[in-house]
Amino acid sequence: MVAEISTKAELEKYTSDPNKLTVSICYRFYRFLVPTLPGHQADFESLARENGNVNFVKVDLSEGTNDLATIYSVTAMPTFVFLVGGNEVHRIRGANPSGLKSSVAQFAKPASSGAFLGQGRTLSGKDNSSSSVPTYNVSNSLTATWSNMNPQAKVLIVLCAAYAFFWLI
Image (cartoon, rainbow, N blue to C red; front, side, top):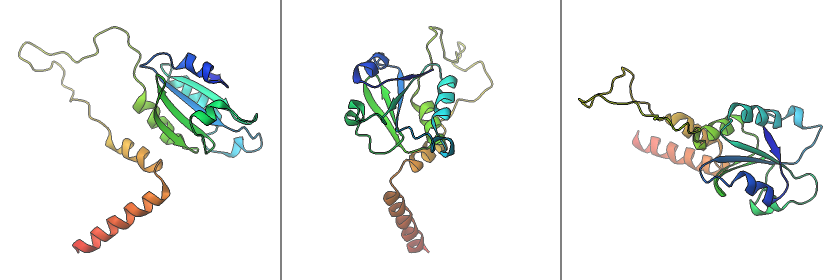
């Protein structure tokens, strides 16, 4: 479920748990544009349904100014602010559905059931399962980083890589 908020006090209600991720979308609702934009609020709501262990909140900025827009320096629409407790850990400016999904997966912690979540070992120190140790997916992290990067920084990186490539030839 996605909650609609408009004040810092309402946001603090969702960020009171210091270990739980809260994702807020700051947007200005234009009825004639929303159906044509990728990553519009329907995608945000489906992501909320898929991740029950994460708080999702919407802040509509079309009704004048909002304290939250000032506090979090919202300069683009939509802006997704990722908070753990009350601290900002990540931000996405603009509609980026794949970046949003990967960032939620990166920063969300699974709901704790109180059960042991480890893989267990035998007395010999070897694990009982035949599965390999889980690995960190670097490609998703790099894709999210690249898609959220400033366009001027992207150009600089590409030019430096091209210079290094031609220097080595």
